[in-house]
Image 1: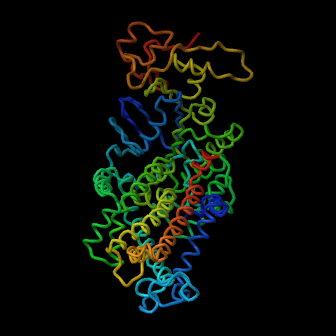
Image 2 (image 1 turned 120 degrees about the horizontal axis):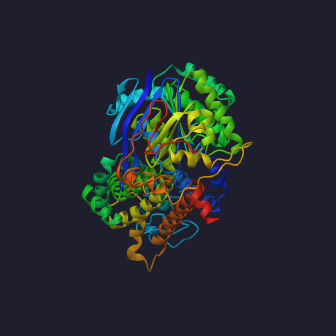
Image 3 (image 1 turned 90 degrees about the vertical axis):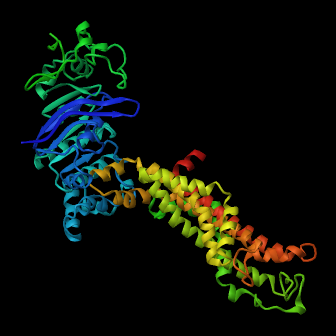
Length: 310
Length: 282
């Protein structure tokens, strides 16, 4: 069953910035979708939209088959029991005045799950789940390192046993040496608990590690979506190709880098037709006239002239 | 709450102006609390044979026109003044703090609440307090009420600003993401992290209230005689300032010391509780 379905999701911020401009997404139960794109492409906004932490301006959102686009505030709060989120900044995302025990028990308190004793037991189990010790429960967030804090954030997100987890750049604020640990933990938990997961990152390697299916975003839209092997093996969209060519891979012959010309256009005033055309090596007049639709079945691409490089 | 922040308490104790302020204010508070034991004479007893005594070995700080001991009256006056200051600090924290927190958190309420606060703030605080105290009638409780209404807008502004800063912290979004109610987000997540500026502000309000109370009493709209208040004793000495300056001077110095102590403590608290400001100074 498809757990989360977003159709034509839109969000415009003050100043006419079209952060998310018509995105379709579908995530099945137990499935992980990776979402990549450069800074400012709207991927974090999309992550907040699917959780309704911010309200969409257009489109629909369905969770377990129910339309939740306009679900009233109170019902939405109850539904959050089944949704978890891990944010980018482990230093800002934990209330500094709450102990780890309070942080981990809070979701249970909010949703009225268990009593004091069972919550304490759950806190210990959660700490163990993310590789921390039960005695860490009495400490405060400032006593932990970035990687440990992110483990606490993950434990908090999983406290109510959600079916759906959003990870918004969960490792980009961490030291490189810690990133792999946290990624492995996330993947292990995702598989063990059968979580559906939206994994947002600008780090291609992280997305590749985490997600069997990957969507690429550019200027508020998904330009390509495909299984991991196709995206990384045979990308069709020129933007995806440029993105991948920028990654240095060990043990591989130097590949030609595709260097994009110009800057990302302003999301407040995106180009007509295909949004990528101002920087696209394949662009022709037609690209300015017509918006390319995201077409395909397993491998979807939004380009008038899709195709692999060779 | 403040003690939970890492090292805030030790920073506070190490802060020189907080230490001096706390020492000064602590001595004054002790003198006021134990006024009945410490005062060498009855502050209310008139004695025409001892009128206008200059400081001597019996009346250490002299007497007023009714022959009452100035030291004793000042000690008791300090008690009343501190009670009023504390009452105002507490009441403005409660009322102004609540108004500011709601204005900062609930966007719909921000406009109406803060325009009302602005309207109150348009009047000079002391003038407003005098008008309110005059309208309510002279008593200690009315002085507290009048001063609280006059000073609450400042506290509300500080609280609102603090809430608006903390509201944008990622952990607030995180609290919403787990399904916490708006009330829970405000009370458990925002307020505990927005209290530091309020605590600092309230030490200043405490000091301002003592000064303003002295003005009310001086003008005769504070607690009615014979209750000794610091402003009232200054007023008693007004007509004899040339011949018996000690009458006004002693309570005047007491007010100055109290306010100095509070302000020094406030500065220390501000530095200890606001890490950003502290690093900026370094």
